[in-house]
Length: 404
Image 1 (cartoon, one colour):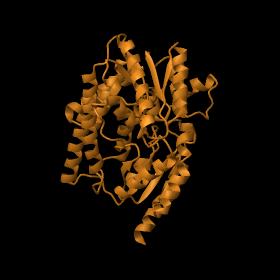
Image 2 (cartoon, rainbow, N blue to C red):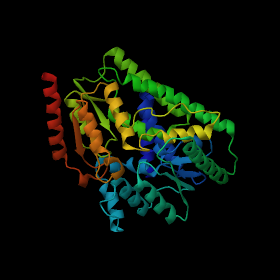
Image 3 (cartoon, rainbow, N blue to C red):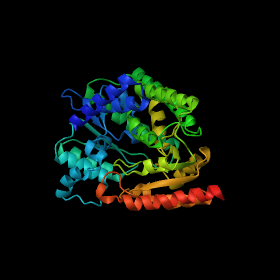
Image 4 (cartoon, rainbow, N blue to C red):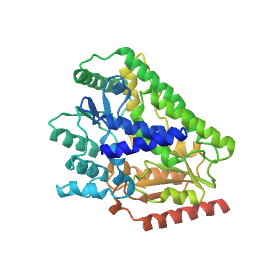
């Protein structure tokens, strides 16, 4: 793993020397951050970066490490041979019914390629599997697994409850680093986050341009993995570079050709599938994805714990499924899409349980909907022929709607 991240860092350094790029800067900073987790003197906090208010971690001298994202950045996962690592977990009795993300992580653990960890945080929303995997790995290292619990409803009492947990986690970070939380440093992390939120809103707005000036696949990856940098100044730098690139593409007429646009949700596969290449070849753009949007309010720096608690509670994957339905319908209308594609990973029970009502709601608005079965990382559970057959039928529907 360390070698893979060294290779990514070196490759992105060369690309950035030739041409500044927001996405390349993001990949370079991700690799650099994860590499620091291997330093002997680093205080490493394992965390679900897309499901935790990262601003709190950036207020301390710790290195955030997301095992799910790190393992899915491995060459094997990206090249379509992720199962070569997963089999190590399967040999230990972990079923192939378990999400491939977590078999990948456990396989990496059994191969002893993961960095150390001093504090193991995970969150109650998105996936029970990640919380359990975090618990297994923490236990194997004789560490405590801390669950950040976020209830389903937003209220004064739920904000107070979540804020109290963040204060307890801050106390754990103080014990880990030997330093008291500096209130001004936390405020500055929140200011950084709010600045990046504002520039990210501009990125979201530019994606509405026809033809779309950026790649929805990359936007999704940035939306999830880029959560690592909420609270760091680097996130705003990444966003500003992206804005500059998109504006240049728009003014120069260099955006990708576009006949149709689709909403993609919830996340994009890690392994190569050919899906996005097929969409591009049919002049179908992906101007918006569920995980590439601002869903939270500006954070109150004067009430930091309550502000961060509210950010967690506002996540569309917290609470009733209708919350996601409303958000996705809003995105479909805001970006004027011609259709919607759901990438369905069978093992992701929490997410796929909402698919039917989301699909029905989109169809009710006259938006063609494709539920595309696949797997995020395990190439053994993905059929390219089946996926392309479904995708072809969906594209025919878009074309018929255009001619009618």
